[in-house]
Amino acid sequence: MKLISLNIWDARVFEPLMDFFGHNQEIDIFCLQEVFNGNEIGFFRDRKRINGFLEIQNKLPNHQGYFVNTELLDDIPERGIKVPYGLAIFMKKDIKVLSHHHDIIFGDAHRSLDHDAKTHKRVIQTVCINENNRPIAISNVHGLWNGQGKTDTPDRIEQSNKIKTHIKKFNYPIILAGDFNLLPDTQSLGIIREGMRDLIKEYNITSTRSKLYNKHEKPVLYADYIFTSSEIEINDFNILSDVVSDHLPLLLDFN
Image (cartoon, rainbow, N blue to C red; front, side):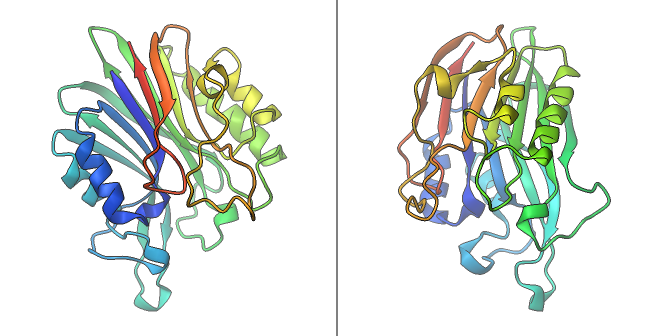
C-alpha cells in the first residue's frame, strides 16, 4: 500500500494541488492537514480555498474522505462566513474501514471559533482499516503552532502525551503521520518516537519544506514526520518534489 502525508497549506497553490491529486489516483491513503470544508466555491484572503475538502474529493472519485473539524474559522469576517477547518484522510473505497476516531490534543473542547492560530484547538484523527484480514490504524496530526519556533513547551509536552494516549487505545499496527511542528531533537518528539520507527530520521531526510517556504524568515526546515510501529513493513519512503504547498509530500510504501 502507499500513503501520502501532506500539509496542503489551505490549498493556496490550488491548480497544481488539484493536478497532484489527479495524477496520484493510485495512492491508497492520503493524510492531509490544513483543510477547509466549507460549502461555498471560492477563496478566503491569501488564496485559501473555502471548499478544499470537496474539491479534493472530486479529484479522488475512487476514494472516500473523512474530515475532522478542529475550528470554525472566519477569514472574511465581514461576510460572516464561518468554515470548518481541520484534518482529512482519504481512503480508496476498496479498503475496508472499521472505524473513525478523533481526540483533542490541545485546546478547549467547547470553543468553536478562534481568531488566533497560536491557540487553535488541535486534534488527532485515526481511521482503522482491515487490510488482508489485519487491522491497521492510520493516524493524522497537525501539531501546535505557537509562532515561536518548533522547540519544547509545556503545551507541546502535554500534546505529545495525549497523542501517545490516543494511539495506544487501538492495539493495532499503526502509522502516525502529519505536520507535528517539532524539531527532531525535542523531548516532545521523543515522546512520540518512543517505541516507533521515525522514518524522517531513518532515511536521513533534511527538509520537508518546498521552495515556497520562507527559509530566511523561518530557517527551520523540519515539521513533517511519519512514524510506524514495528509490525509495519517499510518498502520505501521518500519526499516528493511536487511544489503544491509550502510543505512537500511524504510518500510511504508499506505492507
